[in-house]
Amino acid sequence: MRILVVEDDTDVAGFVVKGLREAGHVVEHAANGRDGLFLAASEKFDAIVLDRMLPGGIDGLRLLETLRAQDNQTPVLFLSAMAQVDDRVRGLKAGGDDYLTKPFAFAELLARVENLARRGKGDGPATKLVTADLEMDLLSRGVRRAGQKIDLQPREFRLLEYLMRHSGQVVTRTMLLEGVWDYHFDPQTNVIDVHVSRLRQKIDKPFPLPLIHTVRNAGYMLREEQP
Image 1 (tube, helix red, strand yellow):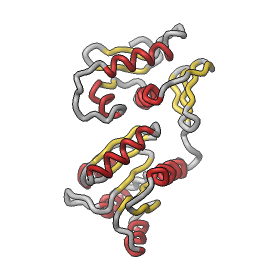
Image 2 (cartoon, rainbow, N blue to C red):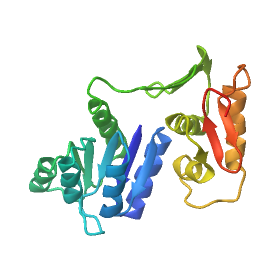
Image 3 (tube, rainbow, N blue to C red):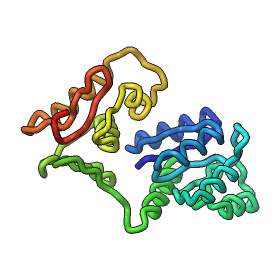
């Protein structure tokens, strides 16, 4: 799933983002209300984890009210230290779908977010990603190509999920460093090349048609036909 975390506390944000990514989700983070509103309004997410008190002139309530006024119905979980009954009621009345108070257990947050995202799908959760004959089951975390099971390590799974969610698009090294490794700087290592190579050994090598392509001077692309 693709999840937006809008949280200004660096420690809390790092903890939540890291945990969600380790659970196999693609996560974007905004540290203030303005950036959070921009991302939520301009990109598609399966769920939003939203703090109540945010810098940037837009707090969590105003951010959510603006989204709902734009008919953006992305499921929202408030994550806040404001734990009084009136605070929770205000959050829900503003359009929030759930409310979790700090301190919190990450396992509970993960369960609530995944449940909200499933409910938000309407006709049922989109639990699979498909590109050509490659299938990824997001619930069982299974991967198959041409019906053949492929075993992936957690990081390989996250890398493949990111590529499949951007199928047909050029994915840059910066995008992979931020989206898969949570690096907001270039560590000047070949970590991406190593993992892409390992993924190709499992996804492409046993099959006649490659899916993972290198786009010279740009990055990588997952697509069925040759670029």
